Length: 279
Image 1 (cartoon, rainbow, N blue to C red):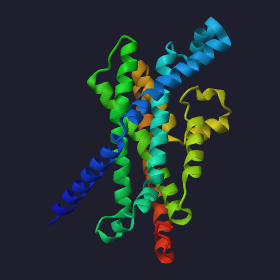
Image 2 (cartoon, rainbow, N blue to C red):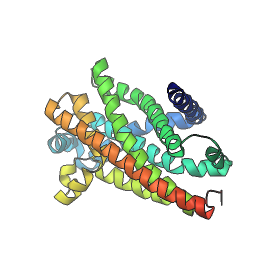
Image 3 (cartoon, rainbow, N blue to C red):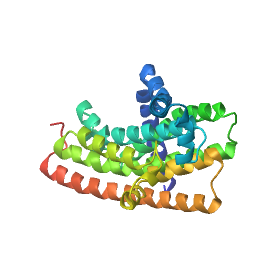
Image 4 (cartoon, rainbow, N blue to C red):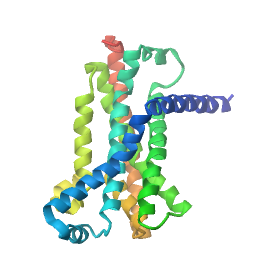
């Protein structure tokens, strides 16, 4: 009897993963566009650099970032930025989509924990995003004339996963507002803007004042972008790596706990006021 809930949770997760896979692969053109966006943004920034500084752009970039390959730097940043944007937007809108399809209330007729259902959505989306952008990482590393070892790939995948899961807590808190206001796109877009600005995806955070860098350190994507570049460039010290992994784990728990707290509060209020409906 004790083993039964675990199997039920496994079946629930598998069903959600299959659902998200079908939604994720429904439009092949959009899938390839998402996969190509990190490279498109990389060439855009590289083109702007050459347009502004000419042939000295590469030397200026190396001096300011300590990285010799702008394609590697920008593509890795693009992978993390687009992944984080997809995670926040999808997690923020999952409740609204269920409401519009008329299936949201059905979750309350099952013995499943609703918060666990939304967290499973986040894990499933993280896995799918990770698989898609692994192709991008393979291409950009191969263009540098090298390949990562299986252990390095495993560590890189763990870093991306730890960078995405805390965003599920943010998305869960935003999704809770759906029960009250029904629309969350403006909030999700604002949050994504701050994450994009403060995570150091396309520029070193040293250009910011200390107070901004302190705020950036509270974002898991900041540590993920730094660690991922260190793994790809094989320049991380073990102490720095362990510290950042510990910080990311702590931020994951913090954001998920806060997201659960906000969601539970709004859920209780929405159920008492009858705001679980579509309108």
